Amino acid sequence: PDSIGIELDSALEASYEFKGARIVSNSIRFSQNHITLNKGQKDGVKPGMGVFNHEGVVGRVKSVSENYSVAISLLNTGMMVSSKIKSIGNFGTVSWDGKNSRQIKMLYIPRHVNVQVGDTIITSGYNAVFPEGIKIGIVSSVNPGLDNPNYLDILVDLSTDFSKVSYVYLVENTQFNELDSLSRQSEMPNEF
Image 1 (cartoon, rainbow, N blue to C red):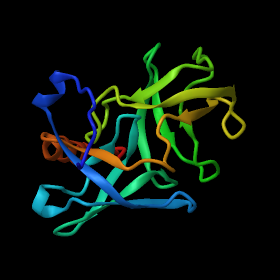
Image 2 (image 1 turned 90 degrees about the horizontal axis):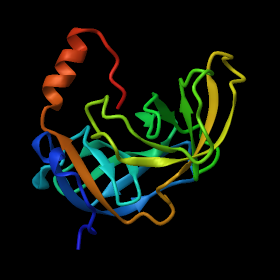
Image 3 (image 1 turned 60 degrees about the horizontal axis):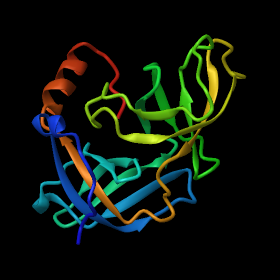
Image 4 (image 1 turned 180 degrees about the vertical axis):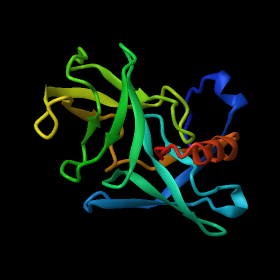
């Protein structure tokens, strides 16, 4: 099989399409890790599609051949995903610092926000790649920011175990081109 079961909110079906795939190669030891999938152009895979599994976010498709595709792993220092704290709704960005393959940093959360160890971090839905609510991980530490005193330094234990991931879903926002075009016209950065 190319996938395992995952419960998806039926409301997502209006704006997103999902395809199953199997991982054929995966790296976790570099600062810029990639994942190769057994689906490509002939299966409808396109650059920019989000990749996730039953545990959480995995990455984003970068390039596609006829039968395969390569995704930028969430364990890639160049990958940023718009995210939010599920319990209180504050949003920021998660980005890997290249240090620990089981943790990621949540950025741009102001110091006054009451983030707690144990809070769940999910995708915000504020970008054109991932729908809202896909799990990223659980907050493991919260400290005053060292680099910028206006923000918290938040570490998140990843929900996805990248050393074991084998089956994934590819998600396509069917309104991606319209949203991306609008972002470009407005000269707004789009995190994906």
